[in-house]
Length: 106
Length: 117
Image (cartoon, rainbow over all chains, first blue to last red; front, side, top):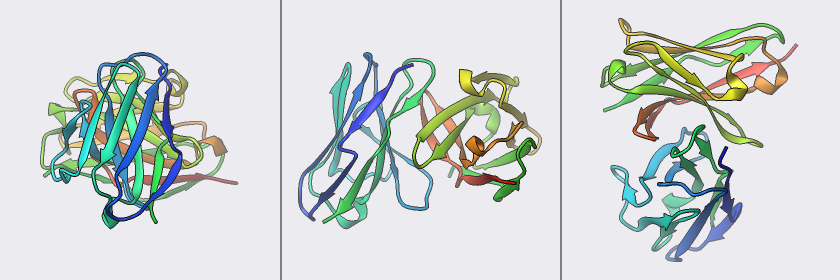
């Protein structure tokens, strides 16, 4: 199965700061999807097919990448962005998730 | 609006089984695959399998082949997952999630299953 490695595991960002989260796949995948999970809540689809924002996601978020390297970027960190972000691939069976990046507010 | 309402928390003894439910509203479950995902904080998210409620076809991750059984009742627009021969390793939060292509565009609120003697 394809292993997804997210980095960093944990990070803190100040309001207004640019943030980049990375997801590396053990083999090439066609797309990467991202989920946001706030404490005590279920995951929410955040970015799908590498770069498409899910409904309601602010446009300060963006996604990019190809092959084995993907990223999620927040142009300017806001308080409400503090959460754990998971990447997920569905190109290869079984679908797998990364271990998550916990993004905290500094 | 897609909503997936899961059943309440469960406490079970080792060796027993549990059946979790996931009631969909805002759409017909026959129009999408329903996936189930396991979450343990130290292990992250693990995909368990999916069911196509239209015809009952299922597919499981290898490690859950003999652990989970997915079913669906189209008359009540509800999907189910039964977990058998429970051990402490099954203590986790379980989510149902609507499958859209190769990602999940709607999630239940999750149900905590605790296995303890």
